[in-house]
Image (cartoon, rainbow over all chains, first blue to last red; front, side, top):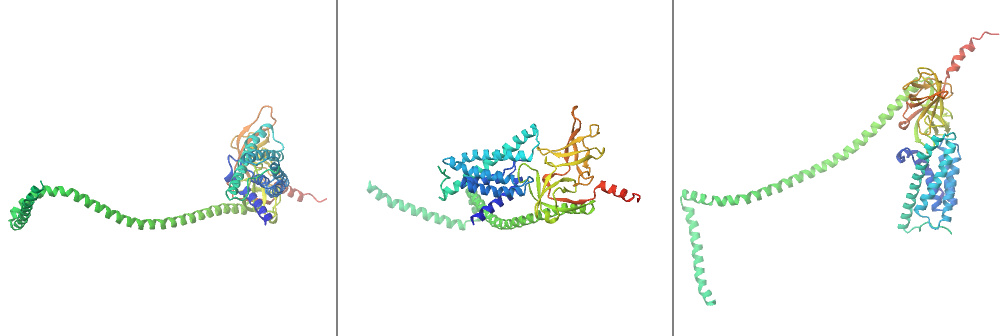
Length: 169
Length: 295
């Protein structure tokens, strides 16, 4: 049941990524919902679950992306793993911590995707893509991740379900 | 002092009785006095009647206002109910109208595609667009036809207006089409008037660039660009766009230009995938092979 729910969540995220871009787009930059999901899975559970959800959602995203299968799978899996690892290193995961980690992961994943997608960019084109796509997308992703994190945390606290995500050291 | 009060009371009572009796007698006499006397009395009472007129009018107007308001309220209640009913009907009709309009637009677009499909000198397969870019790094479309429908990678994708892009990935029931504005797509194009050929390629900014135009090509802004037919995915003569700007530095070996695409990629709803066509070169070369003299 739990696995089925996670799979449905991954499918829904990829479908939303492919269909809701026109609604989510800000100045032709749209968020990577799959990366946001992988990060949140890591933050809310652990690095294993984060990486598994990241691998799954990345694989599904690869099926709908022109690039070769595997890139998004590896990147999202790695992002989920690293997001899960932050819960070890930070005593209490706060919304601001989510923002910082999501920005860093998004920049890393974006840079790797950029190198694979546009291997022959000249200096001005690379500058344009970094300043107009890579950085805004990282900020957008981090805002969404932090928003979802804060919302979920608030709902959980108000219903007394689970306490705030605690570090494990 | 109390004694004087007791002594004055009977006198006052007598006087009051006399006054009451006199008044009654006066009123009784008034009923029997001649008409002229009554007119005189009416004139005397006129100012008093005028004083009464004001309050009477006020009360009457209040009464009218309340009556009108009440009747208007009752009428409004009916109108409100009718209004609510009409509003709901209007919303239903607007929804139905919108649905019909949407169907008409879709039908018109696909009718154009089908007409073009019937007359185009190539075999095409119509497809709906079911999704768009799944990442920020590619400009792509997802169509609802895949390997099961006979789609292969590298097939050209067009609309009635012109070239859209190329199929780059095929799943069993869906395919990914990379748009012409993506840097990973390059097709051969030519200026329609001068027949000079070049390479059409997208840029990371989402524009379309025409590269490697001959340096002496008389290309001008506004020239139409069509496919040259040299690659296997598009036949010759399909519209790509117009030259928007020409750039040629003195040190450059070639001219290049910015291209305005003929297709608005953001408003596409249906496309045609070119499944096969007769390449012009093989068509021209085939007769020559048949006329070779027998050894």
